[in-house]
Image (cartoon, rainbow, N blue to C red; front, top):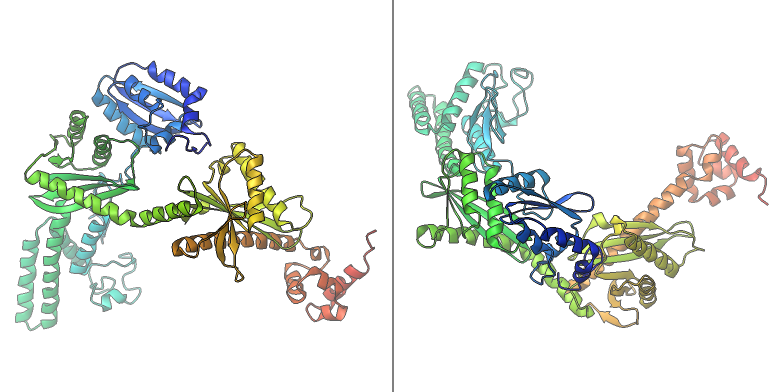
Length: 629
């Protein structure tokens, strides 16, 4: 955030630094001791928004409350929301590190670097106490008498092992329950396609099923050679007995198990002896990569994309990510190769070794084969970020082009658009749509039902809706707590002028442009309150974006208008007529289109739509009522 840029609360950074609350926080930070500990930043609702550790609390926390140009945009955004903070003093940096990790995991603060996947390595579970046991995937083993195989790498890779195992041994993957469903129905399509041995058939026994499960267990234990030799023996015997179909089935199973063995070896490499950390910080995204090596071979890869972290130093970011990643894992490698030295490497080593129950070495290689592995991990991180940010960069360039075309001093990230829809004095509504970085943010859309208007008046309607919207901002309403960088109004110069007038009345400064349509009701240009038109058709990307915004805003207004009309019609005067319920009311309105037309219809015309008695009641209701005077 550059100096003078408005925050979400509408104050610039310099204004925040001069506020009484900021000075009080700064004074409290300077009073902290020069001791290790953890600081906990909270907003006005007592929500924890950031947790950090420090060698010396006074020095670290005081840095946040300086009017420093070195603060990043995210740091300033975070500081602008701090209402108060607490600290916990510890005896050592190590205790501060452990406590920080625990508090981050508990509170998941918005401004901390957070890994999404904290579920640990997956395991394959098999409960042999069941008559027909099935394989399942779990996060952690439990002391429940079942057998657990693993841990493996990703959940997807583990599911692949289970699927390959079932395919190789033709185990059931359907939803049938055994022995409950045995013999109840014909075998499913899997059996007819040769993917399952049809364990739901009465001729298949529990003993055969358990023998097959026994083979599966040995395969998960890595005894592929042993199982393969058994299958080869069975295959040769079947061939000698001229049971060629059976021999072919056993041959296919043998080949499937060979492939399974290779796959198992790769996936089981999550128990790697070496992990290599890669990291890359992009303009919009950052990526954390872990390459798992076993016996010198790459066995698996984990990665996580995240928004660019708030803190500026890569070493601090990597330290936080390594701590979160391994504290949630059930297994630890022997060594972890790091792309840079970490300030708290000694404490982190102690913490991870304590969890593993053995020494875990953190190494920062400078040259040689290990340094090459770091470069490979970093390259993976770079490629993931570039792939993920292609679209974001395109949108960023588009928004820069919009700002340049309109002559704005800064790129508009948040745009709000407004449209009015009316079908008479009783159904006047307005819509507000929000686009952030060129994409709709539907959770921020708002509807307005306009009040106290003497019939349709687009200018009075626009004045009312914008006044209500920005007054609610000034009153601190959270639903309207963020100011847009650009206002787009459906209409021409006069509509834009009304919007500009509202902003001046409320002492707000936001660029305003009207969205002008051509004869075919397509957006052709933007116009400012002074009447200067800006053509957008020469830039196809901008033309498409503004057209999308105008159409979306119009659609949102029309939908709300229809909803209001439907609600009003459902409360029709026809409901007052004895014998007319929702069904007959709908029939009458479908035929005559309006209550007025129903009122003007003859009794005979009404009888063509509803029964005679109801037609008499409707006609009598409208023609025998006393006149209003």
